[in-house]
Amino acid sequence: MTIKDKLSKIQIEFKAKKSRYNSFGKYNFRSAEDILEALKPFNEKYKVYTIVTETTEELCGNIIMTSDAIMYDCESGGSVCASAIVGVDLNQKGMNLPQQFGSASSYAKKYALGNLLLIDDTQDADATNTHGKKASKPKLVEGTESWAKALLYMKEGGDIAAINGKYQVSVAGIAKLKEASLNG
Picture 1 (spheres, one colour):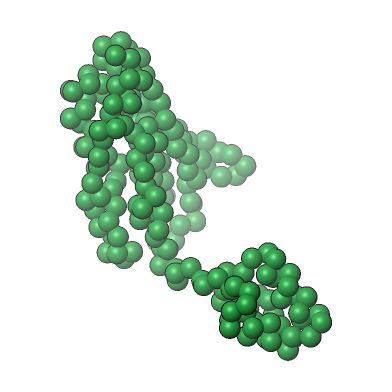
Picture 2 (tube, one colour):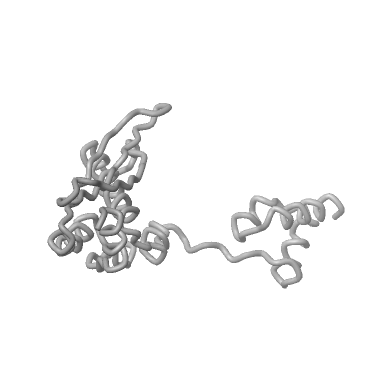
């Protein structure tokens, strides 16, 4: 069995629980450590091992971290690699420099491992977390009562930015609302 065959079997069988809880965002999540712990039984079963390496570089004034999750086949010596690339936010409030790099490192490792193992995080907190921001705005749909109010507001000299601040508005909708303000 090749390393690609082994990886394919692992991807099918692999599960990593979201065993951690973010009390601020009120969601469960999995960390890179959780993924690595869940991967250990597969090392013996398929005679493989996985390591994660990281590199940083400066690109256009930004620090970029690349994390590579590499699975090696103990029998053949073959390997398979998946990567994740993240920026290091040096302006992140409340964090010192080691914490900024550590945060980027954790995120990059988690996603490199997720890419290697085909972990579907579409329902993961990072996909749904608003990070303390308000939930998404309602859509402004033509023909609704909200649309009629927005049209009247624009005809009376209202500002499209105020509507955009309250609603999700399509490009076509913005054009129609602007047109209404000109023809008001």
